[in-house]
Amino acid sequence: MFKSGVGILALFGLGWWLLGTSAFGAPGRLVAVIAGCLVTVGLLLVARRRFLDGTQPDPLADPARRRRFNQINALQWLVIAAVVAGCASTGAQALIPSLVAVVVGLHFLPLAATFEQPRLKFPAALLVAVGAVAAVIHWADGSDALVRLVVGGGAALSLWATASWTIVSMTATRSEVPAAS
Picture (cartoon, rainbow, N blue to C red):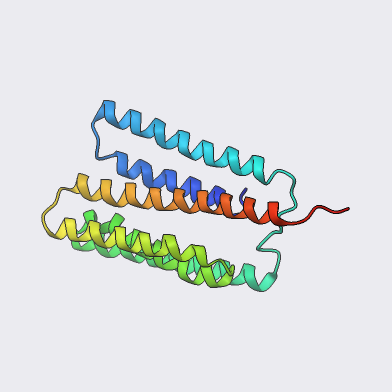
């Protein structure tokens, strides 16, 4: 399930979802957190069931691809650290989630090329758009809670949708392979 990317997408989706739920009060947040946990566990269980036979190749087995993956992610985390430091030093902490969503979205573009997975352009576009919309809400004097709801909820939904799309497309691809005679 992690070789397919579904595990990473589902778990990071939950992280974003938890950020989004911080906009709610106690009873609503509890329900939303439980719902997010159920979606995440559901995606993980479906992926585990679908990919349990272990026939899925490891996309990071190629050393050049693994190196590129590590470079992309290292750069992403460095830029996120710079965003956090910059926002914290200028008093713009409310912009951190929005700008992090943009950075995370942009990191999917080289990943799409590295893994030859055009579907990764989908979360790239959505995360950049969600981050931009949330930043505009902030600059338009929207509440910090609304910014967190928009960026957290939007990012989570885009990652969960991509995880679902991955499961469906990989399942369809596997079912099209003729059985050995």
